[in-house]
Image (cartoon, rainbow, N blue to C red):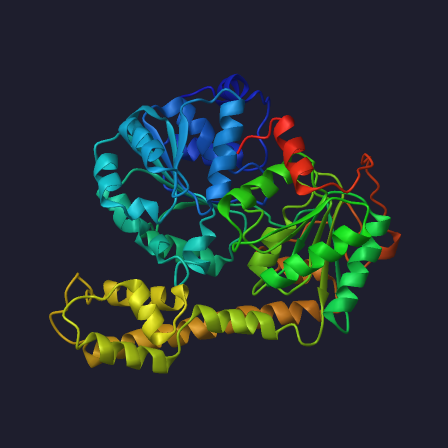
Length: 501
C-alpha cells in the first residue's frame, strides 16, 4: 500500500517526524506483514496502529489489557479530532454497550479487552466486519500474565483464525528474546517481522537503597520528596501499604497525594488517574495496576517501595518516568525481608500439585462442569490459580460443558509438568531481580543486558554504582500552594475544571 506517511502523519496527528521505530513498524503494517514491535515506554507505540487505522480503511482491532488505558486513549483521540474510535469494556452499561455493538462496523479503531473478545456474540459481529489489522497492545502480557492470571490472552490465536487471519501487530515496551519467542509461539505466528529497539532510556538515573524496615523506607521517601517536588509515582506490591504510605505522605508533605490499586471502585480509579494526568495530584502511591499506557510526559521520579517480581516489570514501570526526554530518576528501596512478598504473590497465582490432585479427583465425579466460583470456593483457590488449571484442561479438550471421561493420567502428568515449569520460571525471574538489587557494578548495564546487546551511554548521571548521588538531586517544579480541603471541595474542583470520566 503506497502512502505518503509524512503527509498522513502531519494531517492526522500534527507531527512532522516519527520517533525511533515508528516509521519502520508502520511501513511493515501497511505492507500486510505480521509484526512484533518492541519499542521503549514513552516512544509512542500507539501511533504504530493509530496512523494505519486512518489510512487503511476497514477496522483496526486493538486488544488492550486495562479499561482505564482504553478509556484514556479513546478520550485523547477524540479530543484530537479522531472521532471514529470506541472501546468495548465491562464498565459500560448494557444500553451503551448495545449502542456501540450496533454500530461496531462504522468505527475505524476499536479497543477491546481479551476477556470481552471471547464473547460469542461479539465474535459473530466481528466475523462480518472488514478487520484490516489485529493489534495486541502490551503483548508481553501473553507471556507474563497469560499462563495463569488472564488466560484469555492465550486464546487470541483462535480469535485471529476466526477473523480470517488479518495481519497481526504485537507491541510491547519490554521483552527478552525468550519472551519475544513465547509471544510468537502463542500467537502461532513464527515468522513475524521483528522490530526490536533499545529499551535503555538514557534520561533515567538509577539508585537502589537498603533499609532496615518499611517505616525507614517511608521516612526516606518523605526526605526525598521534601527536597524534590515533581510528579512522582511510588509502586507497591501491597494495597494496604499503598494506602498507609499515601496517608503518611499526605499528612507530612506539602504535596497532593493519592493512592490507586485494583481493590478500588472503577470510578475511583479513573478519577485518580484523571487527576494525576491533569496535574491535580503530585504523588501517586500505586500498585502495578497503575501506569500501563499512561501518557503523562513529565513524571520525574519513580520509586519502588517493594520489589517487582521480575526485571521486565521493573523496566516497564521506571520507563514511565521522563517520557518527555527530560531528566528522571528511579529509586528502589528494599529490606532483607522484601523477597517474601513477591514469593507470596507467586504462591497466590499458581496452584500446588496437591490442588491439582484434589481438583482432578472431584471433577471426574461430576457430569456438569461446575461454576468457576463454586470450584474456587470449594478448594480455596484464587482466580489465577483456577484459571491456570481450567485453561490447561480446556487446552487438552477435557472441558466442553460436560465431562465424558475422567482426566487420563497422561494428561494429569502433562498439566503437573506445566505447573512445575511455571513455578521454576517465576522463581528464576525473582532470583534475577534479587541478584540485580545486590549488583555492585554498573546497574544500568546489568539491568538491560538480558534484553539487548549494546547499552547506550546515558545523558544523565548513570547510577549509584557509577556517578549518581541521590542526595544531590533537585527537582523543584512550580507548584501552587494548596490548602487541605474536604473531599467534597476536591471533587467540586475536579468537575469545575472539566475533567471527563
